[in-house]
Length: 364
Image (cartoon, rainbow, N blue to C red):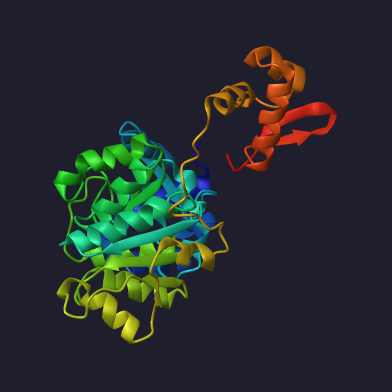
C-alpha cells in the first residue's frame, strides 16, 4: 500500500523529538525522501548537527521496514491512513505553502484533500447571529465545495453539522491526534463526519493530546488546503485571525461576513473589512460568483403540479418516453395528453424530442 519513499517519511515522522523544521533539515542533508535511508548513515556527521548522538542512535534503531510496517498496522487497525508528502492523495494546494507537514494522519475519504475546498471558521463563542449566517452560507456552499473547519466549538461545529445535514462533505483539521478528539464533546460529530463520507485529519500522531500551541499551527493546514477562507463571526482575538493570516500569506481568497459595529463577537470580521484585507460577502452567491459557479435562487418557488401533470412526470421519471407509451401508462385520451404536454412544455417542465419522444427538463 505504501511505497519505500512513503515508508521512509512515515519513519521520520514517527520520531517524537523531531520538529517539522528538523525533519526538513534531515531530508535536505540526505538528499530527499528517496535517499533518506541510504544516506542516513553516510551523512551522520551532518545529521549530528541537527540531533544529538543519543537521538541519532534512537532513530537508527527503528530505521527498518519491519518496524515501520508495525507502526502502519497499528494505526490501520484504528482505520487511520497515512497521507505522506509523496502520496498521490497529498493536497496539492498545501504543497504550495512553505510549511506543509510531511505526513498527515487521516480517517475517512482522503480523496477530498484534492477537491475544491472552502474553509469556514470563526469564534468558539458563537451567537445566534453567527449561527444563522454560518448555516445560511454552508447550506449553499456545501453543494459546490468541500467545507473545511477545525472541529472547535462554535462556528466550526455549526459549519460541519450544517454540511452533513445538507448532504455535503466536510474536512475537520484537528489540533490533536485522531484518537484524542478535542473538544471531547465533538467526538460524535467527528464520527458522523467520517460516516457521511467526510474526513478528519491531523499532522499529530493519533494518540497526541491537544496542546494550546497546536491550534494556531493547525490553522495553516485549514487555509492551506482551501481555495478560500470564509469567516462568519469572529472576535478581534479569535483563533480564526491566525487562519486569516495564513490565507493572506498563501495568497488565497478571504471572505468576511459583516455585523453591527457594536457587536464584540464580530469585531474581528469588521476590522478585516475596515483594513480591506478581505472581501465582504452578504450571501453565499457572492462566493459562488467569485468562482463562477452556477448561482442558486435562494427563494426558488416549489413547483406545484396538477394531478394530470404529476401522472406524466411519474412516467418520465425513468427517462425519455414516446408519446404512445405515455398515453398507455397514464390512461389519458390522446387529445388530453397532447394538451397537457403542450402546457408542460410552455411551463418548461418537459421537453419534446425528435420522433415524438418526451423527457423531463433540468428545470424540474
